[in-house]
Amino acid sequence: MKAPERMQQGAFKACSMSLLILLITAYATTAGAGAREQAKRIHDRIAGVPPSASVLDVMEGHIADGNALEAAKLAMDDPAFYDATLKNFAAPWTNEDMSPFVPLNDYTATVIGLVRDGADFREVLFGDVLYIGDSGLGLTSYSPSNNTHYEELEESGAPLKDALQRVNQSAFNGLPPSATAGVITSRAAARAFFSAGTNRAMFRFTLINHMCRDLEQVADVSLPPDRIRQDVSRSPGGDSRVFLNNCVGCHTGMDPMTQAFAYYDFDFDPDSDPDGTLGRLVYNTVNDIDPDTKSRVQGKYHINSTTFEQGYVTPDDQWDNYWRQGTNRRLGWDPNLPGSGNGAKSLGQEWANSEAFAECQVEKVFSNVCLRPPSDSDDHNQIAAMVTSFRTKGFDLKQVFAESAVYCAGE
Image (cartoon, rainbow, N blue to C red):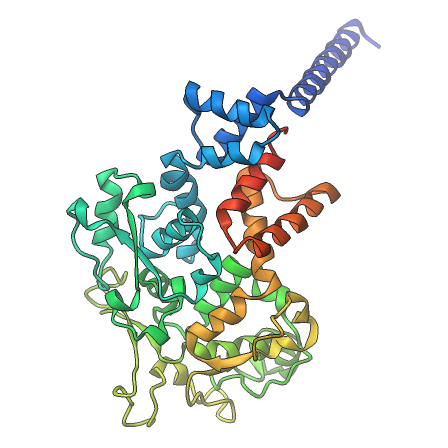
């Protein structure tokens, strides 16, 4: 071996050894982090900003006294937890691109408010609930036809911790209380997922955002296809096997549940307002019966009806959860619920009372706070413990943030 090559190898080994020593030292330092270091890490993870010296002192004292959860709850008093952490946590749920870079809106504000108040987070999918800016801030009033109210609230710099006020959604968006379904019937969700299409987008993205599953993960070809609509070809590309082995797996469960949204649409002018900036959520009442179909069902449920004329024709908003049978029983449906109903509110209750909903919220918070997904047996045991805590402590998501931060404080 030539001398320069030996020198290069020697330098490489020395560099690798130095890097190994640094990694071992770093691991030892974080694994054995003291109370003050843990306090700072908890605050950084929860609020995204460093604590003041006085707050750090109090948090350190709580940890030293064996009460790390109190330290985490103190970190959640920082306005940045609401203005940044929670906003960025929820914003991707409000658009199909799953981008956090969107303005504050009624969906995000409602998630933030529910967490702030320690409310039963299941309400996010069925409550007659909306969070708006406090009337004393002088903002443009909430409108079901634009997002001006929330954009002004964000631009004002008012801390969301103090600025948000809980109200009944039905009093502001014109829906009957029985037709409200938390963020499902928020303007932001309607614009993103009820706009055009066939309302299946609302089903899919609610499944992704609140059950942590996409359609491929819940596909089940063993269920009856009797509720699949007319717009789905039974022989895509002229091959019925594609339908039987692929399409049917998603549609057998999705279409019977998406029927819950049959009376909803997002109304906007695609010519003058292609982005739906001035559109609004609409809901067909008994006074909005179509003279041609003799039903309240939105016309989008009947598009492409000649694709397979023998397919299911949606007559109303009665949904059924076929996933209570087959492989998707593992989602843990509540045996105290009937598994069927009318409208978005009762479907939201079906989802929100499942084991999958609780597990999803905990996993999302864990990944957000710990900056990584759960990866080993200790992590998964912690997730299971936090799911139990979440369910037994009133579905308070703030508690999950605190428990996650404490668990990851030594990393």
